Length: 402
Ligand SMILES: *[C@@H]1O[C@H](CO)[C@@H](O)[C@H](O)[C@H]1NC(C)=O
Ligand SMILES: *[C@@H]1O[C@H](CO)[C@@H](O)[C@H](O)[C@H]1NC(C)=O
Ligand SMILES: *[C@@H]1O[C@H](CO)[C@@H](O)[C@H](O)[C@H]1NC(C)=O
Ligand SMILES: *[C@@H]1O[C@H](CO)[C@@H](O)[C@H](O)[C@H]1NC(C)=O
Image (cartoon, rainbow, N blue to C red; front, side, top):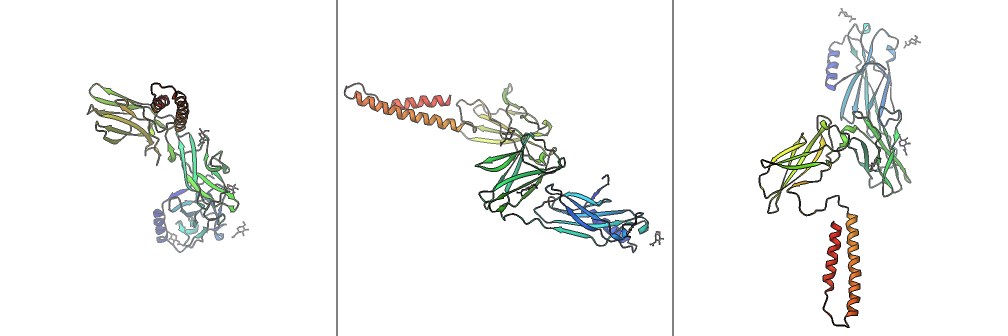
């Protein structure tokens, strides 16, 4: 602990190597020994350990440093660091090969004051564990940090997934000593399709490692490993309060309030969709990006209907990426006369009303049929059963719309 670590880019590492070699004075340094990769069960956060070369162990007067190079599967390239320590922890993808190389760097009286790097390195390549039934990794793993308050991760089942399989999600981050299991699984059709963190606090700007493994009648499932940072998975809530009014000099003024949730206001940017419906029914729409919570537009044609809806996301100054929120309900000028069903319209309720209406129609037509049969003996003014039925049905439907 307390050791200093310096991180250099690969290019800089090569330049250092070049300088070191130009100043080579005939000293030879052995590479480190006993290179091992230790897995503490942190789902990809591994510890690399090594020992100094045997010939240098007792040369305490000579400062020893090490240059560690590892292939970072997440960044897709080699990373080099220099450290006086004998271990280093880094994030790896456990589904891919792990490659590490370590050099010794010697300075002080042993090398006449210059820094000498070992010509060779010690290398370790570790293949991923081959356990698990082939083709049983989950796919389409996606995490959404709703309103920056609750995280939900979901996954899809691969075609080869045995029907009897049961999946588990484990997660780990730097504040946890051990990997923990999902606090509440999301179940659909009797199987686990995701994990609800139910408001459990996860740290941001640090890797959260996930593992989805499991078992089935055919054997263990192939584990899937994912690492992500939650601030890049935020989906703000939908804007609920959207106000629209006309200003005296024929302008439309639109303003709205922040959605509920914990997303800091200064991180939100907005997209306003403006659709104009002309008297001929033609709709033209445009999207406007803004950092403000208001918009003023000229009201050009009096006979046009202007509708607006708003959605938000986190902008690039706060996070690397973000999900768009859902759209707000539209607000129109002039306001809509008839009631149009909203997308969230409760379809079940509509079906119940329709079923009730149909039943009422059937019952009524049966009753009317019987009445007409009874009355047909007595000549009387004719009644149109279909007309009555339609009237009844219309009134039922109007009730449904109310
Ligand atoms: C280093 O010194 C210890 C005693 O201080 C000795 O037992 C050991 O053999 C030495 N190792 C080497 C490689 O010289
Ligand atoms: C060590 O460095 C000094 C000054 O740079 C030089 O005179 C001397 O020859 C060097 N010794 C060896 C063994 O290279
Ligand atoms: C997840 O948990 C939160 C809080 O307990 C709840 O509001 C939300 O509806 C849950 N989501 C799912 C998909 O079950
Ligand atoms: C899944 O992974 C966790 C964490 O590494 C481990 O404790 C558990 O035994 C594994 N389960 C299966 C079925 O492999």
